Image (cartoon, rainbow, N blue to C red):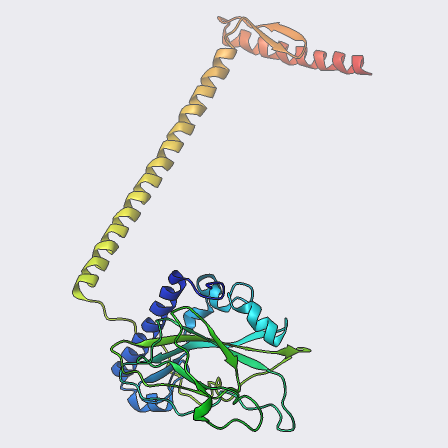
Length: 327
């Protein structure tokens, strides 16, 4: 069933992100000669044996792009996680294990110990491994020792070894205390596995692994070196830059032209309004309120003043009459 699995688009997105992070870190290591520091490990990149890397990807913090991994409601395996840990389960870590061609097998280990040695306790944390390629016996699947999560049975026992080889996107979910190891990769391809770790959070107190996930004991790699562009990429960038500038110049010219046209239109509109006002005074009569006043078109300046006074008088009389009527 694909109910609990990532789809192909999500697998491809994770694969691209993991390989891009690996290449970016290694490019940074080579450019700054950080090979000695790499042996100790960086805050976002650590060796876990020859040819094996544990990587923290900053892009996984992008809830919009990678919510299918980190969202407590969207991740397809969450019903299983909550069935084991309870509804108060929380995400405490996420990353990618990358096994390169020729990598050596890991040492058998448990990611976390028992919280108490007095008695067997219920599961307090789990890992979810999601391979981004189909696993086979050659490309380094994870070997588990069944029952090693039980107090007193932690040691490796070949009779209880199980090595699942799921298809890409199919999650493998196991108790944080279960013993396991990644096998060597004798294939010609890389073997990336995304992992997400969840813990029980009872009464607001959640389990935190300060050993595996602490950044304090690792070197800070700082700003990562971006990919060096090829000559063609630089030429295309310059071309796009010139096109962007041309578009900006054209946009600015159009905006200035539009602004000038608006000013011209406003001036024409103002001139038109003035002409309309002048024409109104050339009419035979001007109606103000309920009064009608004759205005002759051919009056002299002196007569115009008299007409103006008459208009004012008529207005005053009209307003006065109107006020009397309203009372």
